[in-house]
Length: 93
Image (cartoon, rainbow, N blue to C red; front, side, top):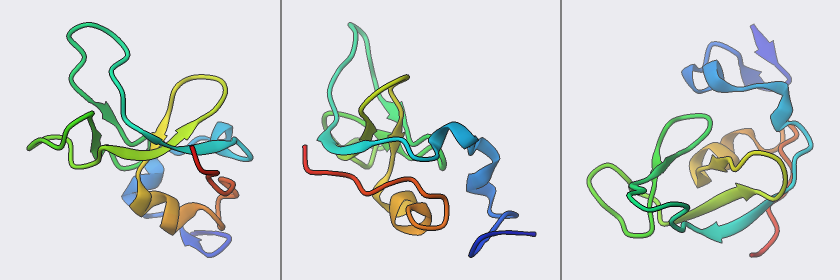
């Protein structure tokens, strides 16, 4: 099955929800949100974000939602899904 030009069998879409549509994203460095915080996942593929690259968090910056729940989308998923899923173009942070 396809969603636009995207193969809906892509495993990264298991976590995709329509709430991602037309959300505004900003390119941002990853930052700690609470004491003891370790990392955040990409909302689509679970790639790790952290303020410093580690074994479990390869990204130190990415696309962060500007409103609603804090959600990250990694550069790879944004490249693959920005247009077909209408994720919007991340603006500079």
